[in-house]
Length: 494
Image (cartoon, rainbow, N blue to C red):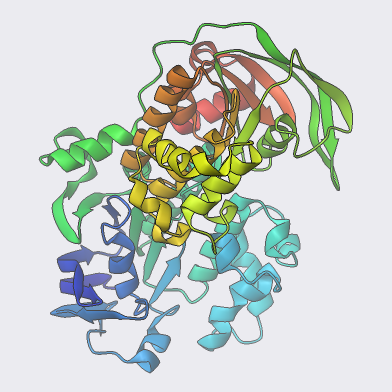
């Protein structure tokens, strides 16, 4: 195994340079991270190593060697022989990457079938691979479909599939983004062990906190160029570039120091339960006070979102009660604004529809759209764009503007910053803090990220398997957790 050697990578899209002069070496047994904001060129660089650039992209390179193979001039047929066998990809969204109609075992076996490996013992090899990535009950999981697995299990299955062709190089492109703290820690530990076993691992991320856990060296990208590189310790402790310092600072959300004053109790939740095919929320009880921010934290599948949907009335409890002391205008900000917006409509039309539903007359809606966009820091020209024409941070701000159109008193936010890079995340969190003061909002903030909860919340509920296992002030719960699961969450987030 000889890893990766890349010299002079340049990529243009529509005659515009998006990656310019990137050099990269990844040796066997080494994990190299590329970090930067969205649009920096990280994923394009990674996909160039696999011959998987998007339509319309043009690549030139001075040298590209993958596990000793000269890949600089390969056509598609040549890349097909290389992908999966010499170099493999683990992408961010395992649910999208895995075929929903195929069982996990078939997904893992596919690279072996393509490259003619392990004939006669592929089923046995599939189970071995699933066990090697610590997927519990591997033989049973091989017969499962992707939707039957948790997010962390799907990501492990995707890594097993990438390892099926025994590649010398593994590219992990944002493979831990949006995973909860404990699952992320396990996946990072797994990627580190894969490197320690002798593979070259390229780890793409926007999060320095994740990079610190897994990488040996780090390259910082900005606007298509490598602007800084070195060992993780060197870059983390003595960054030369202001941009790098900003990324590092944004990856460690600043804990909230000013605690909102508790007003009257707005909501009393008493022993609320919800069941689908199995119990989801189990006897949840808590109060929501005016003017404060309540965090709900837990692993994927802990029913955080189900509880949030009950707060806004999108789900009704099977048992128990949610008792508001008086009528409240409650609005939800979804985790995925791209999915929440109608893709056919402009952003301005979506916000205008929300204003109409709130009873704002037609003559004033255009001015109100401009005012709401300005309030969340967006230029009024963006009202004419469709959701896909906005960046992730712009879409999230537009989603907040649409929620504000109803003049809510309570804002429920479901993972609103989970897929954003650290600097954009910090700006959105600052926006929410400002809006809370200016509009005197009460907020409920659902997240798997304890650093985010610490930065924006006064109080917190910790959920596991649908039950609230611990609750209290954020400072108390995170500095002296009482429940073993809370202690595990806090330890994984450090």
